[in-house]
Amino acid sequence: MKNYNLKKVNVILLILLSVVTFSCKETVKKDTALYQCPMHCEGEKTYTEPQKCPICKMDTELANTSIKNDGEIPEMSIFNLPSKWTNQNNENISLLDLKGDVLVMVMIYTTCTSACPRLVSDMRNIERQIPDEQKNNVKLVFVSIDPITDTPTRLKEFAKENQMDSDQFIFLTGSVEDTREFAAVLAVSYKQISPKDFSHSNIISVFNKEGVLMHQQEGLGVDNAETVAKIITESNY
Amino acid sequence: MRTIGLTLSLLIATLCIAQAQVSPMVIIKGGEYIPLYGSDSVKVKVASIKMDVYPVTNLQFLNFVKENPKWRRSNVKGLFADKNYLSTWQSDTILGINLKKDTPITEVSWFAAKNYCECQNKRLPTIDEWEYAAMADEELPDARQKKTYNQFILSWYETPKTNKNKIGSTFKNYWGIYDLHGLVWEWTGDFNSVLISGESRKDVDKDSNLFCGTAAIGATDLMNYAAFMRYAFRGSIKANYAMRNLGFRCVKDITDEKL
Image (cartoon, rainbow over all chains, first blue to last red):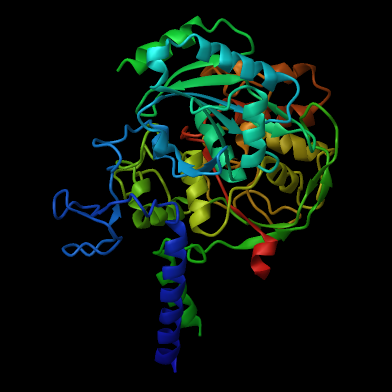
């Protein structure tokens, strides 16, 4: 009786385990991910599917490689974030897809009438000062802190309204959770203070081509010379 | 049956899975409350949730780290945890000499805490959920006007190294929750929704301000002082910080249960 029950329990456990383990790792990017034995039993050998290491039997893990670009992602890179986003053209992207360009990022919401228009104009101001030959290497990215209202359609309209409907500008909307996480990485605070309004930090962040934070500009309408200089330096690498 | 139960819990304790880490939860009945610290005194609605009775322990987190090597000290990326992450552990998978299994885990970043909860099919509480549950004392769901309640909290804030005390060593509150006050500070999911000074984080950006509650001296009473300390703390930390006195517990939406 006991044995029977134990078996049953084990079976249930196994089912539970497989279900939950899977859900824990749902953040893994299936299309580009490579898996590796955590003990490196077979050196740097990688697999395209998660499996057990044939030598030590441990579960393989997401390897620290990226197909899009050779070389490791630096530890402090935002490309380590697994979050998924949708842009103003309704395309699904991950932050890693932005690798290779200098990123100038700000968090706003499109229905904001006080600080955001000024943040947007700060961004356009910065963009204007980037020499044409370097614009190919720079993207200006707006991440919505109000993903419920800011649908891709709304973002597209916003881009048009503000003469930012070009490849130079990227507008992203994601899940509430991923947005909170992204803000945490940028050290941006925000809080919904009414159904329509948020209070939020006014921070423009510059990331290098590897996704590492290089510079932050705080406040509205502040002198952006340092920010622009940083963007130009980084885009030359 | 008892043997089976024991075997089950032993088996479970070694796995990453949620239901696995034996951690009792109780229901906190939702309602409205006025947050202690905020720019306006508008009532905030809090939905009913289940909350861990105790903070996550060293042993539970050790098991999690064993199952999820990406959260081992030597593997974790700087973006997700600073150099203080589990820094008093002897190795990747051995607790520090002075750390007991049943004391609260600390030195964990927000990312680690968040992922731990997600792996248990839970999440971190919001600030409002945490504060709502934490305004209870032994007898009342909202004891914030009671002198004894506030004195307990403030005397704890002055006591060093309470993170070395066992879980459950403080009082059981109205809801059946232990240790919201008295052991360690706790991560909340939206800790970065605190904007202490309007729309800038400048005032609270310096590490020297981490525990500074002096601005509350003008505040009306002890109650606001204690709350100010917590909000100022949240406003001053970053998601990859790992600190000696900062742990966490998880919550679960009740609607999830019904699915």
